[in-house]
Amino acid sequence: MFLLSEVNDFKRFKTAGSFMSFLGLVPGEYSSGSKRKQTSITKTGSPRLRRILVEAAWQHRFPGTGSKVVAARRVGQSALVVSLAEKASLRLHKKFKNMQLRGKTPQVMITAVSRELSGFLWAAMNLVA
Image (cartoon, rainbow, N blue to C red; front, side, top):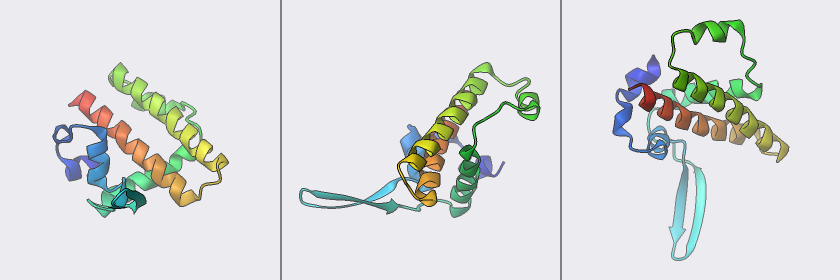
């Protein structure tokens, strides 16, 4: 609910990248001449909204198991949205595990997963709206 009240209209974001930028989950950039360096995330936008996404991203440390509770919540939902949610769950867990195998720190892994999660949220909200 907080997500909807903060964002209000997902249609104002033309791409998932623009939504990620709104949340401040994209890397900053320092460039001079031909040199280009990416910095940490920009942290623009609502810190509360970014925090909610980061906290939600922690859930993707574990594979989605398709519990009875989740199945009950999906009753009456659009098949397209449900398939997008399943795809997101698998992809986000895979991203977390791949980054873990590469030796990334937990903060870097979770920030990357929350950025990817925001892309799936943007896609789902544009399917529904």
